[in-house]
Length: 195
Image (tube, rainbow, N blue to C red; front, side, top):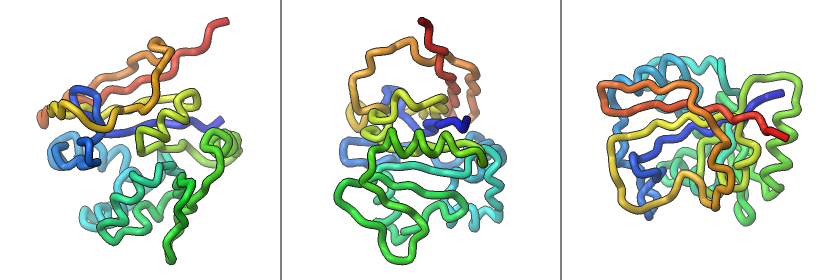
């Protein structure tokens, strides 16, 4: 079965963006970015890949799911098709896909959509790139967390997960890699349920 990975940048105090959605406090240069370009090129928007002269190989992910607010960050910059190298699924109850995009905008239940994607026999992983509300809705479906913990304290903002989490032992740390940039990439796997 395909796995859902929540891979996202987060502040040291657990926020994925400032209260207004601004994530510009997170460093976009440094050796942690070099690793992401090398190991996870498909997680970069098409313009970034083109600027770097890198091809997305879709080695780990072939699908990206995101909430409308995450998708709208690119729209505000004229980017209606941020990840054309991936199947893009955007969740919104009230918005439609802009013309000319390969992104699919759906009002369907996120859990049902992700379960159907996970059950597909072909393909690799599914990347949840944001945001907090969607992560909250999909919490029980998330198989892995990859947190790019930035050396920044925001004090307030959009939390990693927008819902009370009643299962604090749901994940176990599988890797933690510090970079000279000050970013630490922490990887977690869901702990198998016990009966």
